[in-house]
Image (cartoon, helix red, strand yellow):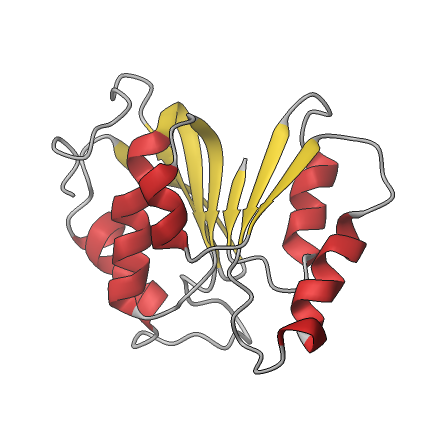
Length: 170
């Protein structure tokens, strides 16, 4: 599993607790939003939030997602995109990372749909991305399989090959 955008680590805990203990969880976040790096509270909180429990291997990658993607080689079963919410940034993360998702794999987008009493709107950029790429002109080989609160889960068809960037509209 890979999570792009970790912040304090709450969703990383949920991912870790729900995954196979023999698996690996990769957490990607540059933790750049602090002028004084030793006092970056998110950077200090996230590892502590995930420490102290035996389970899957957890690997921290303190880079921007586009930097980490350049070096990424491993197949991904489950990818969560929850980082820069600009529409072009969501598009870039999608383009950089979805070719690594295995056939039958899942990608989750955070803050990507309207929901009752929610904070998103039709103009919210992750919502616009999901509407454009998965609702208005569905991407070949990918489909929305679930939606919960602000999360949208998309599934890669088992017949779509890995490294499908050319075939799937990237």
